[in-house]
Length: 185
Image 1 (cartoon, rainbow, N blue to C red):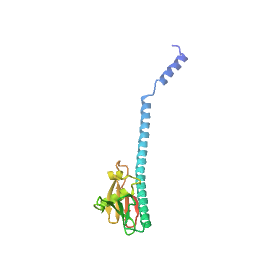
Image 2: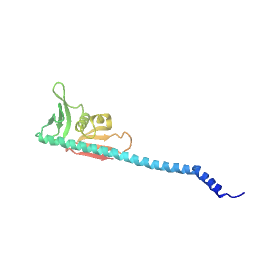
Image 3: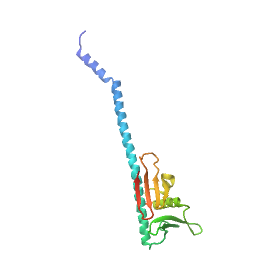
Image 4: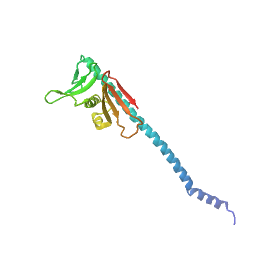
């Protein structure tokens, strides 16, 4: 048998061009799976941080609205209620120190109706003060935040619909001094 260099080179080219071996394909798939798992963890943390920032932004919007109400209270001569500042037929009951306490609505007979209970008062405050803020009233009414009352004010706990946060995100509003605090527990 005569060794033919040209036929040997052609034979080698055919072997190298025939594709990847099974081992090479498995290694490539393992590398891709590892990359995907790292990306999944990264995006999960990114989404968690985005939700946390959303709650912080909402607390800042609430803080700004509370301060704006306090400024309006001072500008109007420190009345017990700010009437029609937030729209026709709406009165914002203020504390003695000038911080928003509850929302009264004008009924059909011309009288002001107060909220049914303290929890409804906190929810109405939230919806009125944030109507132009981070969340619309429909988003808050849909249950994105649980409303609880405290002796000193209102507590709004973020309902994490996707389970991305590692703890509780809470916004607290104190009617005694107008402080709005965000905590992550």
